[in-house]
Figure 1 (tube, one colour):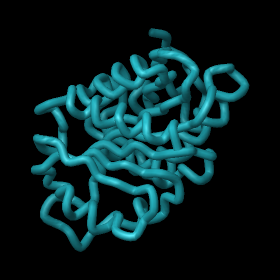
Figure 2: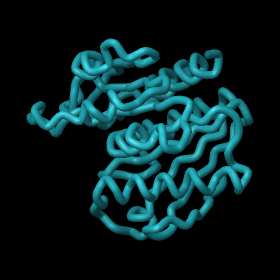
Figure 3: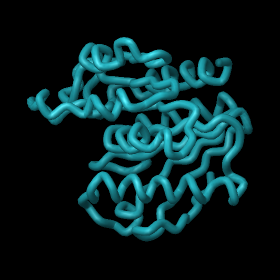
Figure 4: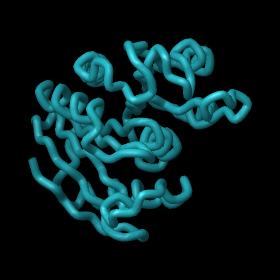
Length: 207
């Protein structure tokens, strides 16, 4: 495993590389309340690498700097785009590009997928709305994705149940939902999360 420091407009980001091969590149962003060592991100990175993917778990500049509060979405998007802009010249981008992450990281991936030329989006625990506030929907971020999209969602996720996410994705070609046991943390069975992601990645590659 290798860590790469990458300059962004908001300070250095850090990409943690798990190099499984050249079948494609998977970039994963972390949530607002945790870093790249969350159980679901580690499981997805492991299983994707075993399937031959190059995986980079991207630590946003605010986390690298040791801050505890995530900045505004626009700053997160800027940091993410800067990392993606750096990778082609560094030799760390190969094959199809899938972007994703958990929670806030999933939102960043959805919002920027078209801008970075992604071939697919893998969203873990997408926060469809704040707990108890379904009227504050972030459905537009999902609907705006025009490439193959999968959402791996906990059955008891207070930020949006799998059925709620599925309703948003109705009519979107290439969009699907994997329901897994657990809540928003996806800690109950991270191995199942990793297996779901690897299965979907195989579908993206064959497509």
